[in-house]
Image (cartoon, rainbow, N blue to C red; front, side):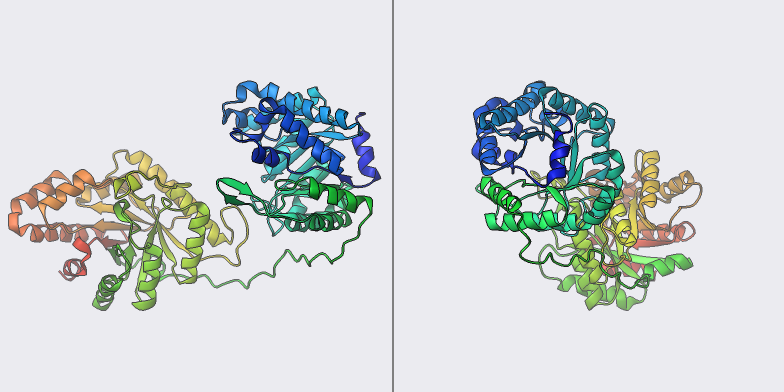
Length: 604
């Protein structure tokens, strides 16, 4: 076909496209490492899927080349067969056209490259060269969620080919990409690049695609760009290890096609879960110029902004800002569901008048306990003392962390200590692995984004959060320059106060402050642990990561014998007195979670 044949066809009216080629192949062929492997392992199956869509009325079919790039194939140990797979996919699509005898268009499907940095450009360019060399009529850049990646992909394709380019991103039900870019902004960014159509594919289903198209319609019309839509049948579920898509009826897809065309779509098809029956319905709707039977739902995608909430300043935040001495006591949540002991301890600390807040551990030593966020919310609601829950990215994904933090915020939690956390194998789960999608620096960044009114992906939340972000710093770290570098990175990510690991010798704190230029760049709370025995000192020093008990302290406790608790209290008292001129406050780690030890130190 001539270079302009596809462009002329688009100008004539809507084109029915095929459905989910890769998903059908994956469902029919067991043990495929990826759908593209079928081009060399089961070419007859690929040919049959194309013919099924052609018989259903598709005028535009996509070669089975979505993931036929070097990086993705390398993940399946197939990169050495890249050329064979990519060219084979085009060859099979062209063969299906020849068998059918119909004047179809064959598109070279190009998905996300999954390559880092500049390698992505080279990956897309290489794939485009292979596909054009084997005879595609146009390129479908599809199922991307990052607009910058799509722009780079268009640039890469345009660097090696002048064939038509259709761009489709994946949108959520709010008309945004996974990276938080709105559909209308996509059109404005892509239109100057000389593409031939823009739209939505894959995603949640037809309605989400229509929502995106509705937002794209006006800027696309102004730019003279046709729209394209190839949505999934809907959200899949996993049954017996396989993805099963909802039974979207042909009539539902016919209505979708009518709606899409009314919005300006000139390419209408399907993605995962859509088969020949749905494509046939799309073709009939196009041929019959079907009009939408129901009005497109109102698409007010700009919710009225929430009234700006007055910034919540915690007691801790106010005291640190005023330069007042802060005292906190650390508590462990229960290993079960009974909060009575924890609430009693918190109440005793509150009633003493000597303690301003309690910080609550998050599964210390990799042992499962009640959530620190939940326990803290109950403490604040029941006891009325401010809390600083520790939060670790060890046990949840970024989305899970955001959900927990938003829930905690709704319960009044504001102070958060972002820590990396002890890995699971340290405690009771030797065979398990932490999630760790981010580290403590990344967690501080998540909290900071929530304070800015957006989630990690850049999507707006109803109103900005008011978290007061704290982080940990270890003055006894073996590699102190790296520890200090991480502290500054945490501050850049949004940290506003820091808490040290437990200290047993003021010289470690002095060494840290000296490296920081004499003072901490953010308020610092020093950790003090009144040791009660030589045995405890030995265990902490030798078995607990991040804690160093100096030899003189160990020796003093050993020499004290049965009076070790008094010696440990005296060492802690000296540290407290020395810390007053160096830091903004302290937090006390009471032995055995017993508040009496903390109160004894504070009262002395």
